[in-house]
Length: 175
Image 1: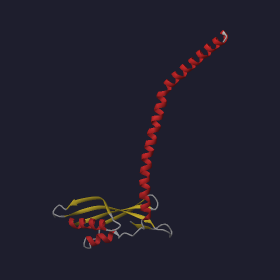
Image 2: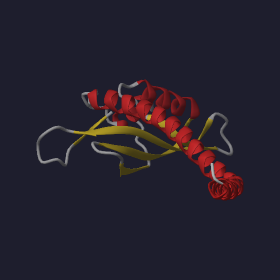
Image 3: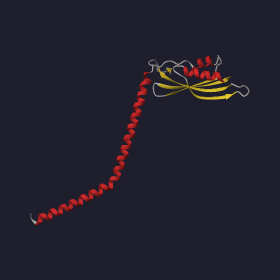
Image 4: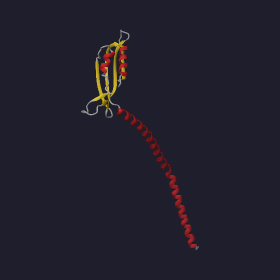
């Protein structure tokens, strides 16, 4: 080889070494930020896997609920009259909250006057024993001042209703 060729090879190897050092320094400087981005993406992927598992469980629950035929619950007022030996509630407030179609939550706030408290407990048990059940969501009891075992109660019951198939779309069935 001629001396000029050797000088060119040395110059080329020096340039390549300088480029290699510059690329290495750049890689080392950006490695921390790249690692943080990759760690964030891994954390996001792990969270998405957890959510996908939860969604699968909710979808299975939803399929079971959609398969429920929508049996009609006994009217709460009928249950209360039976359990309270004919005594009617002083006040009944009925509200409904639309949930995910075709479901809604029915709430009834019932005010019971001066009654024996064991009858109130029997009414709650009887309502919960129905299929579909009325669930006791809230309960406030005030004891009668002069009569032991008697008092006034404010009970809030809840049940689920499923929209009836067909028809005008306005009807719901208690669940």
